[in-house]
Image: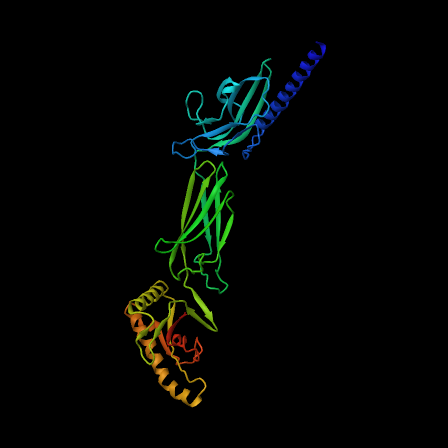
Length: 384
């Protein structure tokens, strides 16, 4: 009998120590509450770090999940939800066998929605002797407010043409919220509002991201146009926010030797003619209209239209010179045709100079029979 009495005293002492240890942890954490990631291995945890009981059907409740391992001798429980100051805002009790996952809707015992902030769940286990053991969950947020987001783009205008100036766009991203981010993305759309490129991630929003001006498939942004950038964040409570900014694209010019060439679709011509080849009239007008719009938006720039031709006699000097006498005026005429089309779009003729360069600047070797037609072309140079 004496041995049994001693054993009961030991069990009671151990239970009391557990109670004291857990209660001390509770009081300590209540004094310095910290939002933490739920851990399914803990004896009490929630299914998320935050929830938003705003009636939108997204994370309107948070589940308090008991994961008790040793409940021998425990008959009853008390479940409380407490705020960050340790005040009980919701409570219930019952037989331990009735303890199951509890979905809390953010309301107190009177059915009133509680304010935003940090909360914690607490279970008190009561044994047959009336002794108590307290177990706390992780802290979690009641958060009904969307993140406060902001975005700064620099430099503007953006000019990713490889000249070493404004070639990389820096996006400075800010998301202020009481709850951590669950996901974020940046959607870049072209002038037609079509999705061009996306940057995205989970959890922490980066302070900065950079972009080189190309889509995932290697397409470059269109010169002298305006893109839009939308930065969006969803927090751990399911609240979403976004902000929108315009991204002006500068005139993209590519330095080739000492020349600054406009990057446009190539306009090519039939052999010994000023009629177009491998491009239809409508497509030519699209290119011309685009160039005219650039000149309208940038009155400090003028344009040089270079006409080019193909001379296949690169290894026959006499024949080459004879051919060049024909090709130089032909290439100049090609440039004039394009100039006239640009002037027809409302550009002052004095802003456009034409040059006929014959075959002096081939982009494909004349010996390449399958591709040398590309030399029968016009090119565009921007000058101030």
